Length: 188
Image (cartoon, rainbow, N blue to C red; front, side):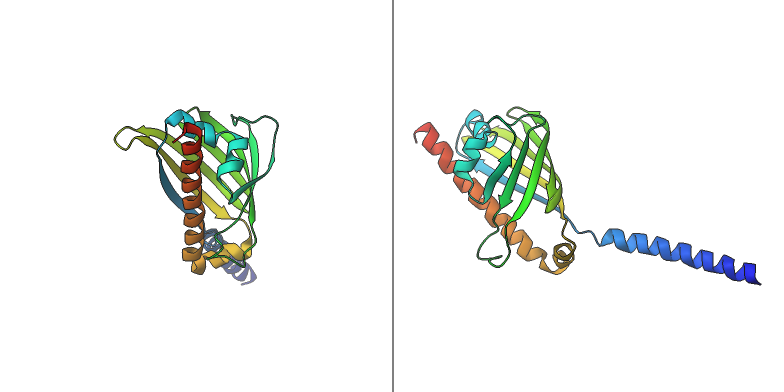
């Protein structure tokens, strides 16, 4: 009888552990967001502006560069840290969040891949292509990240539209800033 009870308790515990794993794994909210920019400038100029720490400081205020390794040019192994200022109209009470990026793959003028840690954790891939039809360069960002703060992660289930709007606002600011930077550099 006692062995029967122990066997049943073991089965219940195993089922409970399995359910806990399934529910727990669903508690991590991931974001798979894409943004695409059209910058009216040549691919070499756009790429240079996105892979130069000094240039990044000039055109994207919301992505405040706070720490980096030596050298200006971003390449495989480069590390860059940002303090990301969220959209003030949407998240005016939220403090900036910090991300640390390590560039794991760089194909000049084609692709950048970064592992992101900090308040966000995941991967960012940036793709570049010339768009002759639109006389410019298309830049596509593929974010696959999660929020590492457990409270903000849980809030993501109800506040995702706010997170999305803040993300979109920061990205729109970047597109506008990069376009203006490239126009100044090309003398337009």
